[in-house]
Image (tube, rainbow, N blue to C red; front, side, top):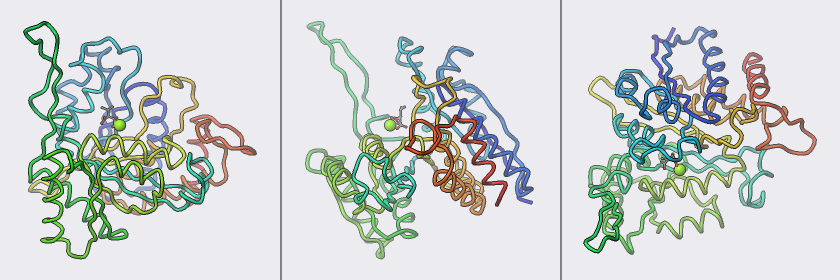
Length: 368
Ligand code: IPM
Ligand code: MG
């Protein structure tokens, strides 16, 4: 049996708790198989933590997140907390956790499932078989750069400042993740920045080029400006294998890539840090969709992105490739034959609830 693993679940707000409940059922399935045992901790985060503790994430939760082997995160935010001070808005929890865990590489796969090719906003022939991996730098860039803030000018008007900043080290470490992934895929990395406008982008391009030349001679590297990349994603997305980019461009381009797949409700993400001296690597896993307050509490959210995030956790943090692949395959089979949650509904298939989607998946898993 695999050694006991520790896990922190942070369901958060909106649909987070509903989809996390289904992911928990899948965790139980893995445990029942006898291949691993999990010690599971759970706590509030985001708006739920503001309500419970007055802050979106407590020091104790951050500490626990650092101690456990992996964190499975739901989603945060909602209109209820629209008016809390900026410093303690629900999203601040996510940014603090990413930053304190040091998870710098955010892996956002955009894969089109055959069963969903008609749900894409693009024509089926453009997206059939699409399988892109976006690697987004996640704890640097303009999200965290200094100086930042809003200051009052002598004439009483204000000035808002954020700073885009990247160092050689930050670019190299995320670049290595992208090159390593590409080496196991189609061997192509497209590095994205605005080197035509920003010095940080120019450095990004130079560092990526030098890294490829020095360490990854077998991986093909191309460069693209971020605006062109957005256009190319909408025009001919299958030209990409791995895209590597900074925090802000990655945020935007990964939403675009996600939309190409037909449902945000299907896309997981993994955010990884560097291995420590003992070989442990912090891992933070979350669906790409947000808290979807408009459908929260109605039992209609698609739980698959949360469940696929758990699959990534098993793969990257626990080295349980077989279980990860079994879950992914079961999700595909459910999509191909079972009912659908409203976000991916199609004619001729019953519309089912979050729990029923979980039931269908568990039935598939138990049959394997
Ligand atoms: C994401 C989200 C977050 C981000 C928000 C909620 C802070 O959009 O994970 O893509 O901008 O990183
Ligand atoms: Mg985003």
